[in-house]
Image (cartoon, rainbow over all chains, first blue to last red):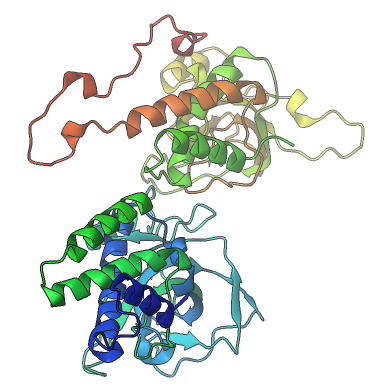
Amino acid sequence: MIVASTLIERMVAALDAEGSDRYQFDRDFKPAINYAIEYYVSIFNAAFGEKKLSEENLRELTRTRVFQTSKYSRIRFASSDLGDEVWSVLVVCPEPVLDPQIDPVVNPDPTSSLYIDGDQTIFVRSEYAASRLNFEEWNENNDNIFMPGNVVMQNKFKEYAYKNFIHTKDGEAPTEIIEEIEIRPYLDNQLVGVTYLRFPPLITQDTDQIYYPKTMKNLLVNQALKFISKKQGDGTNLYSVEEKDISTLVSLMA
Amino acid sequence: MGTPLRHIVNDITVDLRQIFDDKRVIPSQIAYWIILVGNRLKSQHIKKMSSGAFLTTFAEIPLEVSDVPGDNLVRYRNYFDLPDCIYDFNNDRAIEYISYSVVPELPNELPPLTNVVFGRTTPSALKSLYANPYTKPSVKTPYFYRSKNRIYVLGLECVKVQSLEVGLYLTLDPVTEIDLDADFEFPEELLFVLKKQVLDMGRFALLMPQERVNDGDDDTNPNQVPTNKITSVNDPINQSDT
């Protein structure tokens, strides 16, 4: 994790604005740093898609939680339950070993999944990792014993799969982001461990933490400076310098 | 203890991933490939070797008779259904023997299979068998013939026989039923050949020439079409004892 103030110190130095009121936190640094945080979400998405980067690099944003599936074998990620906004699902682990090993609880609304709070149990391990399928594969693989997510193989060749993200229930909280995955072979009201990436929170104060690895400090500084250079539009070479630094660092990461 | 199927599947999975790191072949498919090749090799091994290593004995298979005709069922004829899938060897040799299933009354009494062993015949050969009093199916010289998964038994029409003892050479279980952690019923000395042939099959299946990717371009390169080594008809794999 990185404290926002450390980035600001470096940005002030790079802008040669020490002791100056030229740049202010609310007006300049906060939007610039938040811009950089969101920018790298996009970069990571592209890198994940091309399998150039492992999600494990973002361990500060990784969370493992236990859910109980709905009767439709679905899990809903509601930010109001989790306290996080889910960025991406890393792994879905059916039939988990928990501590303590609890049984599924009575679900008052079986059409919805349940979030099992960490006070009740924690995820330990699982022998299974569900594969991610797209919507076409999801339908086509149903009876194909050689593809994950088929419903035929129920012996030791069982291969779980999940389909993300779907949203099948509207009108609950229009402003809330609800993401839902579906698991197959079907798990009717069963416990499942899920490891996901939470969307990195944006900063509101200079004492806030930025949930990226420390190795990204320079990348964030460069990207935030690039944002400031756009605002300045003063013909300095700040934009081109930062652009070059960023492309070098991103290519090194990939 | 033999090698469990899980070890063979995992071994081949690891090997294939070293060649095609982005491809994911799930264990059921590799097990299916293993069963395909394994049945071929195992059947050759059984035919070649006089060994009981893969003989499965079913001690008490009930003998049945139906008074209504049905699909592949002749009424009033004794029959039993094969308890499992067997190899289709020449002259039904995957049925090693059929005998009466009688529990010896004394500990040292000869086992029933040494008394009377059923002879194998075909429906077309039955006429000549019945024509000769020395070969006519009877309690002492019973016969059997196979019709799909059903074994008809002749010569027991006048006696009440509850069950039979049968020795069979079974195929490997299908992938939907095989136990991943049980001993893989396969000659250990042929595991090397099995692995090599499954890897060859896997490599061939996983070759993905660029032309097969629908990117809108016609960039056919004949060198990218998947090919496999042409195997001679004299290759040992294509030779059989019959």
